[in-house]
Amino acid sequence: MSSIIDIHPHIVSPDKKKYPLAPLGGTQSTWSSERPTTYDDLLRAMDEAGIAKAAIVHSSTAYGYDNSYVADAVEAIPERFTGVYSIDILASDALKTFDYWLERGCAGMRLFTMGSTLPNQSTWFADRASYPFWEHAGAKNIPVCVQMKQEGMPLLRQVMDRFPKVTIILDHFARAPLEDGPPYAAAQEFFDLAKYKQLYLKITPINVTPQTWGKGDAKTFFGKVVDVFGADRIGWGSNFPNSLGTMKEILNAAEQAFSFAKASDKDWIFGKTAQVLYPSLKD
Image (cartoon, rainbow, N blue to C red; front, side, top):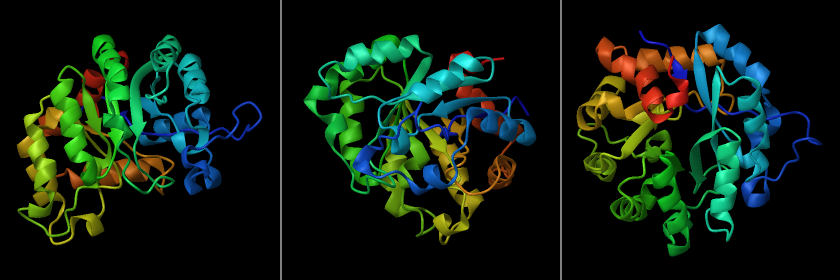
């Protein structure tokens, strides 16, 4: 297999004075409080698991829009890390802020439109006030991760129709409903997104659980995802330390879920797709 790359780990510093907490939604996520993980901790976990490089995703549920800790990690270990940052895309100075973080090692952006501290699906990412951000992301060739529920897909389609040059990465498969099993009729809206060639998928431990598959299993679901989207549009992320377990355990579970796949597809999912999305992670 090619070099393994993680496109969804998080880091949180125990130094709250240097990196003050300001979580989106006003409440810090439980995982970031209970399992703060420094970038040195992340590096050790990667080495134990045999992971070559990582695109660290900014911890919005700890730091809001202050990406300083991820930026410091990328600056400290650029040969192993790149960063996926978050900004307020509706702010009047959004583009200036965007460029500031680009100068500080940003290789991707992430929009936290729902999650553990924001349970309801937001709509602001498709507001007209967001258009300059989307245009800038396309012009700068910066991929944008979107964490969302399936309910947000109509608005996501509007964004992709308007901004076809922007690469979009759908976090956690948008938690598409899979419990009904093959042919996954409840998730048809998710599979219909395959027509948007700008769209990539990020698989995480949230998707690698038998409870999620319901009446199906790893082969029936992920096999269909690979057939519909193509392995070259799927990338793996650990969600460490948000998801429980060591990074090695998390990686092993994902590799087991894709044990049915051919070697060339696994090369894409566990490394090559990451290098397309984040060229600085190339060998």
